[in-house]
Image (cartoon, rainbow, N blue to C red):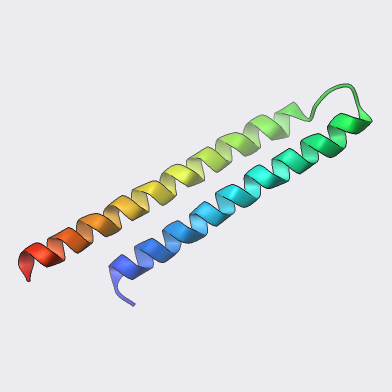
Length: 76
């Protein structure tokens, strides 16, 4: 596996983690929100924030993979 493939694979894994985090927060809010009058906002805010950060990491990894690919094509 070369660095470009590794970056793409890692980006895919980050995207899956972010999606899973968002789903978890939605489900927790649905369960807790139905049992109390206050939504589970501390976890919700933190969960969404973490998902957004992981999404940004995935985007950065994909951008780096494209950069590596372009550099390879230019050099050879």
